[in-house]
Length: 307
Image (tube, rainbow, N blue to C red):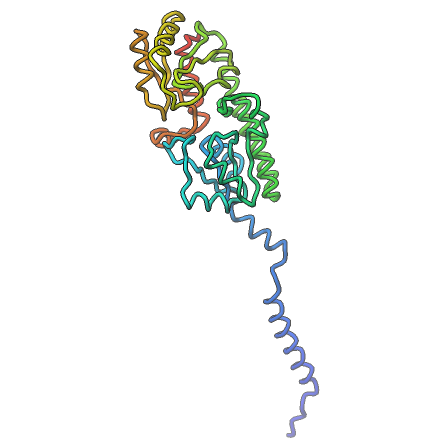
């Protein structure tokens, strides 16, 4: 029996060639924008923060959508920090860099000033640079809440796809800071004393917020050494006002505070954290900004003899 050729073979071969060519072209096309965006959302935004309280705020607001590098190592003095080559690279490559500003960390601020991406100077956003010589704004929970709001806004600009999540997380952190503020107001509302003596004047914002006064052994600079006359004046103040505690800090030698306590007589020393960093022991205990602030409150209540 004679086999009749199938007349449709040319059409089939043409369709096969068209399918192969279309497949090759499709694999060479760029990924559509929507697909690229979806893939990118799985990669945390690289962010650098100058020191602990800023890093804490950024991590709380950013959550899983950010990868935060705290430029100040555990136990390091933030004021004198010098950046390593790797840290300088991290500053340059970050999507956003957060610094306090106002010369608080000169080396960090100088590195951030040369980057191409956005740098957020938080004192500028608070309007606090020209209002006070005390940069320790994060010790007032209300000012810390404003820092959190700034972080949420600036992260939302850098990563619009997660803006709503940043806003939601910032609201939760703000609520926690509002509760902290309420604990301070209640805890320091009725105190016998209204003056604390500290290693250096890092607690001005905290004192103004809750109605007490600080007197620094070394003034605003933690490196200043008081002379014998200054120590004598402070000892007289301690005795005259019935002060029972001289506060030292995590990163400052307690030597001067102990000398003052001995000179005043019947006075103890205690650590009051300015929260510029977490100590190794605080990290082991899983402390954070809120828990250290609560620990500070408990120590202040004892020192000020609050009911």
